[in-house]
Length: 110
Image (cartoon, rainbow, N blue to C red; front, side, top):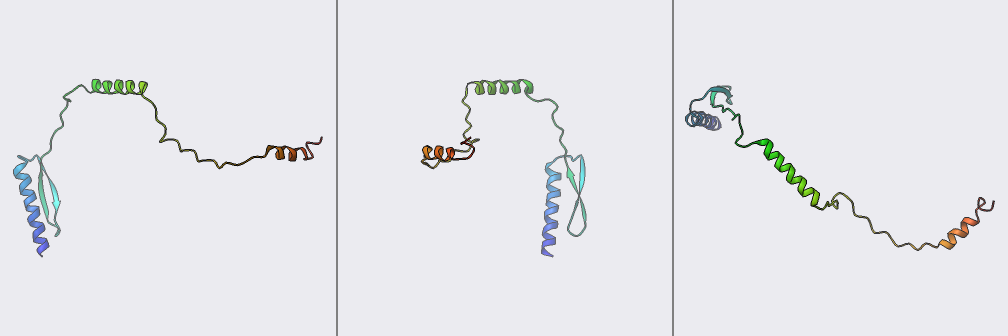
């Protein structure tokens, strides 16, 4: 019961505060309480400004030119893209014994 009263008081404050501070609401939306009651919450909708305070195409062109300038003189670092090569174990290779074993093969005697 205490939770229900606290919820209703909070909803009342929300509805009252939005109606007071938002000015004249243009429309309301339904807000459903715990016990199934429906409150009409006032909503003030704002319209977006049609024009930007700056010329977007010029700003994008300047950014693109700056990126082009930086990329043409900068150094490309691919160290994060490539895995470091693992250290190879030093293995002694005896080429003389490899060649002698190859010469003893039946294909080599032909």
